[in-house]
Length: 464
Length: 161
Image: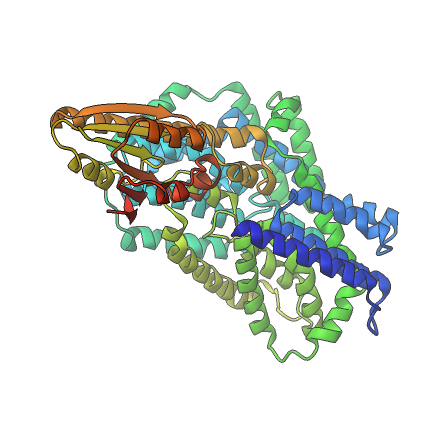
């Protein structure tokens, strides 16, 4: 069924692409603007359908934009050299170190062993460990790192797939923690930085720093985690009383690891220095420079070697993010979004708050079906165009797409943590649809509370 | 003497399937259990980890190894349970564990071994059923005369009894 759906989407994309290239331009829209729509629609359908890798779609976009005269060649390639790309590069090298040295697993074991005494406490520990780690490394990597540990816990407790509700919850809270935690910093999901990259490219002089992002984002994951905590405490059926076997197993595994190795200590020093610098020195040293220096330091300290980096990172990520920035920015720079906002959206009679509410829920729905990055790359340029009409602060628009854009709680295809949790075989998709929708609603409420009550306290007003 | 064959593609919620299979047997009857255990996971999972999550092949293979080990472990435990039950019930039992084999081979085996009754437990796990355990028996079942029951993860879905 999905294969047919993909074929329809791609066919539609190709037809619209050709039609837009051949049709005469409407009044007010330049040929470059119309061609940029054509490229955007083609890339959008390819990103949604994933018939070719996401990064190759981005590469196609980079090639088509100068080819079709949307932007000059030099201008196009200059957009690719965005500082967001270099931040992602540095942050991923550091994340590879956390994964590869075993420091991430050690932190997980330590937190789970010490805080997860009863069945409910263990679930809450997994939730918080997953959320915490997703603040310092990509949420996908956190899920991959925790998965073998959770599998081991489930096996030790002799939990039966599909029968044990506790088994199902172990994997779900792992994924939910990673997803909620992943929106908190730039490190949890590089889409956050993609959004900031688009903001910087499209609105000269505007940006969101590392510390500022956390300042704006933290209430949303906090509210979501509190709600999940209450669900664990009061709502979920916990069909196991004794998890002491899991504790013994965790303690044994921890003992087997021995004390922290020299490499883990060196990585810890590098990480603490980098995070300190991101938080407190970013006014003087750009966060991308800090990330790159951190990556270099991890090499110099012997924490990682190039082969490790190749094993733990898919460098297609650079093409994906670079391409997404190029395609989305070309819409704005060619005047396409301005034309769209005047021609299509100027007659909308929505209040800015209602529009932002719709924008958040729309992005959440999109991100359930396509990757988080693609969701941000698809929705944000269009949101900027509508935001222009209302005079909405572009920083608010950026946050209103990027934060909900990371919150795919239901379907495996929306987010790798969901896919990894699902692969345990402890539940089926139909078992989590209701819970996923409930969390989507909770996330939306968390967004409304944060945007309407908290951001104004920081001086972040809806209208620019 | 009657021969009942159980094809296990899923090891989740097996109780109903095992109970039903043993209930079909009389004293001299024989039960043959074939467990199909994949040695790989669906490419969808690695696509989601590497192409969507942009993590490297090592991360993807770590997750895949954990999944495959878990499934093989479940298969072992399930077969042990069935063997124990056969011992208690003094039933003649043959157990075979197969990695992915061709559907035609499996159909040939069903015909060749003179099976009198067939019980299948499929999985609803899309990651496994669509690619790794791609066994569609629908056409085969419609052309055979033997009684059969088809379960999905322990839930009865189809029978010709």
